[in-house]
Structure formats: C-alpha cells, structure tokens
Length: 363
Image (spheres, one colour):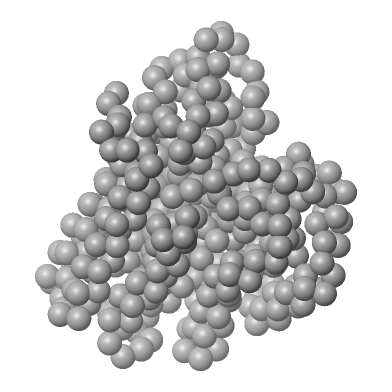
C-alpha cells in the first residue's frame, strides 16, 4: 500500500493543522451567511463532514513510518516482530491490542495496519457524532478531530488513542450490555482507560455535577499546596507499570511535565467552565451531558493531583479526549443563545486556537 512520502515528515503535521484551520474558518464564514438549518448550510456540513472524515483517515493512516512520529517506529518494529513469529506473544501488556496486532500481521502489511488503526481511531468519533447530533454531526466531529491531543494520539500514543475512541463509542450505546462490552474492549486496548471507566460509573450513580465541580476545584488547591505528595502516593500503589510515569522522567514528543502546568490547567478549565455555564447559566438539562461532564471533571481532577509528574499529560489525555464534547454538545442539542450558529463557529475557532498555537507555533 502506498504512503504519502512525497511530503516531508517534518512538516507533515503542520499541513494537517493548516487544512483544519481552513475548514474552521470556512465554517465560520458559513455561520455568518446562513442559518444553521438552512438547506445550503445542511448541504455544506454534510459534504464537509465526509471530507474531514476521509481526509483525516487517509492523511493520518498513510503517513510514512518515520521517527518524527516517535512511537510509530516502535509499533512498526513490534508489528514486524509479530509477523515473523508463528505464535501469539503478548508484547505491550494490553492483551486485546496485542491480539489485534497479531491478527493483522498475518493478513496485511505494516502500512495497512496503521491505516486500520487510524480507521478504528477516527470512525467511532464519526459514529458517535452522527448518533448524538444527527444532521449537525459535523460540528461535533470537527471539534473532536481539532482537539489539542488528537494528532498526537493518532500518530504517536496509538494504543491510548484507540482505547479512548472505543470508550466514547461505548458510552454512546443505549443498551448497558453493549456499553460494558465496548468498555471491556477499550480496556483491552489500553488499561489506562480504567480511570475514565471508574469516573463514568461514578457519574452514572451520582447526579450532582456542581458538587463534582467543587471537588475539581478542591483538587487544584490540594495539588498546589501539597506539591509532589500525590505523585509519590500514587506511584507507590504499583497498580500498573504505567504508574511509573509518575516517578520517572524521560523523552517524548507528547509534552511531558515536571512543574505545575498552569497553561494545561487553563486548557482543562475550559471544560470545567463550559459545563458550569451550560448547566447553571443556560439551564441546559441533559442526562448524557451531565454524565460526560462529571466523567471529565473526575478524570481531570486525578491529573491535576499529579500535574507535576513526568508524562502527566498522558493522564490528562484521559479527560481531554472528551473535552470537545463538553464544549460543543449543548449547542447542538438545544437553541440556547441568540445567533447560535455564529456562536458555534466562534467556539470552534477558539477551541482550535489552542491546538494550532501549541502544535504549530510553539512546538
């Protein structure tokens, strides 16, 4: 299978972000000229939805195997190692992901494998957007794929990215059995998804998001006042080998942290504030949204406690992957504000601005 190797790997990600910038700006232009339910706008968002779906799948899935994408090289080495063997050997410790990779190695080449990984990463987001938002799915899907960590976990932290997409698919299911089955699959792809799973269960049982928001704020105070206490506490639990990230430093293209990251806390607070504003000021009531918001706050609160740890961003991602939904969901479900289609456009631009600045301008 061909790869897109005629584009330098050093500018590969930047091109993706510039394309997404064009899509966001063009969408804002439409929001000023057409009502959200105008026939022309509906045609635009339907066609653009297909464009961003197929562009993101093939552009990310057909990227060259290059050290610029960091862990992609390791995944390729694991795949080739598996391809040469005749027996299934767990490599990563995530059994379902290892089994998936083993099966793929017997029926396809490594490039097809990465393309399939990308499909599994992106298509669930498309499916969930269609299920929850119908003809306005484009706005939610776009918000998800312009998120700050979306690119990194599609090209570098691949297992983690796959597991979070499968988790979103799981919680969108109506029947509890299918929710459980898909969550098990997500955990099998990356055990770290246990954290949002526990938070999701709590959200199903405790329906007071304002109380959870107070807990989130309390965690900020505890993290600021107690320093490295929380990293040391959790690292001593030895729950999983990934918990060693809390105590050790290393190198990664996915930003690490060794100090209190006020910039990332500010980014996380977007979700905390948005949910509070929708629920308390705009009086938006929705069972699914309350559950998403509580899950986000609890997962993010854990990260805040260990914010100074190396690779703490990997734990931040366990809440950030649903941040787009926290920000955009209510605007696509009810008419809450005047000129709502314009507000949606500006929300997308503001949300993407952090992504663009961090990924293109700073890094």
